[in-house]
Image 1 (spheres, one colour):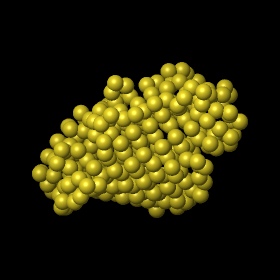
Image 2 (spheres, rainbow, N blue to C red):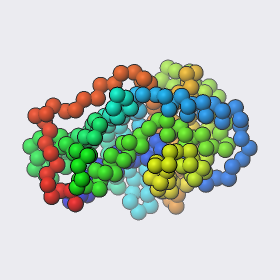
Image 3 (cartoon, rainbow, N blue to C red):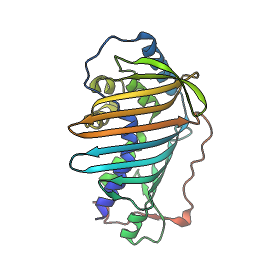
Image 4 (cartoon, rainbow, N blue to C red):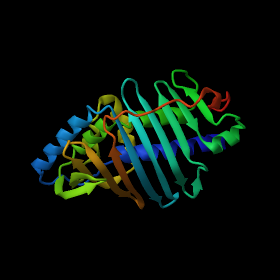
Length: 273
């Protein structure tokens, strides 16, 4: 039961990240719109230089056997002076099973702090937060997976995937949260997209993208060359994905702090297998 809860929590967090990284399609390439492709290439270059940002996301999924699911939340991210992320999932509902109270997680360096009411109840924990040191061995595979997903939440890599599109085109100018943007739309092959990533990121991304087929992406890019919105719509064998993500706060200071020490407990021994 405990493992199921941890897995469900990780799955909820993974869905948000997979939605960001998961833009793929097996559609055959068609004529390239060079202007749009060049814009996306420049966007990928600019986002690689971003050191902090915030993402608000809503992900809806449907599966023939597992039913419907929804994940809604936000992530604060910084890469310098050290990798840190603050994840809040207000809604985590998978196949009719929800995580009461949602999910909160804070990553700082090699330590992740997780706050999940259902998990604490199962553990009989008296502290609202659980700390896991990622430099130690022996913690659960689910925690390892969770860390991997957070580390993949890299805007530079996301836009590298989009540059693999062979049919991207501009479809007009629109305002997104008060910013004037140009709207681009397209698809791209999974394998070509994965090959845009660093070698050590490709296999994990390939496994995630393999779950989707015929995915269409739309991205809204502002005058500074940075994306403000990304939507994904995909399907495979009756399963569907509908995701919307809003980006903001580029290079602005983010306040990512560990929870107070008196509210933190360690993951009990014997719960990691």
